[in-house]
Image 1 (cartoon, rainbow, N blue to C red):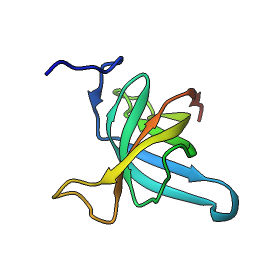
Image 2 (cartoon, rainbow, N blue to C red; image 1 turned 120 degrees about the vertical axis):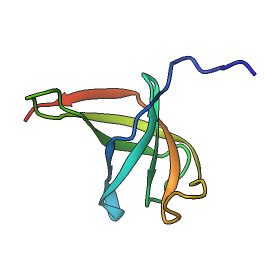
Image 3 (tube, one colour; image 1 turned 90 degrees about the horizontal axis):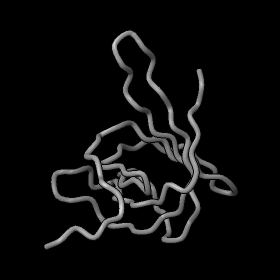
Length: 106
């Protein structure tokens, strides 16, 4: 089977923080499964709808003697599914686009 994705995906388990605004404002912690230039697959204890706009922060690991880097992103949910067996069943697997981003400075 041939890969049809436009962007190469990198299997990275990184800390993930999802922000929800509005009536149900929340800060939800999760973890990425993979990341590409066009999007992210992550798991979190969140109930999100396909098409919902989200803001999230991915913490990139620090190099030797450096601080970790935070990447603040905006995107939309494109797919949700239950987590696979062996993963936290209270979490949901969520695929989202990466439409805009900025590096957060400490």
